[in-house]
Structure formats: structure tokens, C-alpha cells
Image 1 (cartoon, helix red, strand yellow):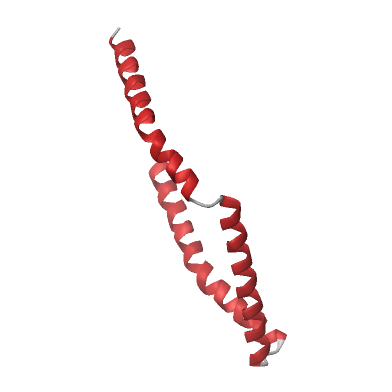
Image 2 (tube, one colour):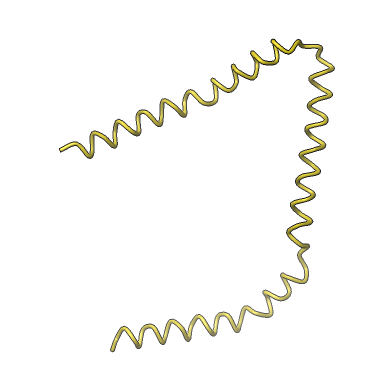
Length: 99
């Protein structure tokens, strides 16, 4: 009985909030641009950045081997701490689950 009353009150509150916020929702929908426009703008921005990075790398005159070593170094530098943290986390979980 109490559960049914609580569910009814919750449904009433949700309905009233929806009724009150529907004009604000329609204003937001009409004022904001479409999401596809935003995603295409992000894609074109990333494409522009990629072209700039390609130009900057070619302007430095570094060889492919040097660029490969730089990429491998930063990949290791950024992923090794995460790997050590994950191993530490797995060991701590194992210690907690151990009888």
C-alpha cells in the first residue's frame, strides 16, 4: 500500500516537472544547432590540425626512424605508468579476495 502511494507521488512529481520544463526544452532545441553540425565541425578541425602536424613534421626534416623512435618513447612514457598502476591494482584486488 505504501509502495503504491510512493510510486504514485513520484509519478506525479515527474509529470509536473516534465510539464514545467517542456517550454524550456523547446527553447533549447530551437536555439541550439544540430549535433551533426557540431560533429562535422570537430572532424574538420581535427583534419586541419592533422594537416598542420604533417607540415610541421616535414619542415623539421627528421627521418622516419627518428620519428618512429620519438613516437615509441612517448608511447612508453605515457603507457608504462598506467601498466604499473593496473598491475598494482590487480595485486591489491587479489590480496583482498584471497581467503
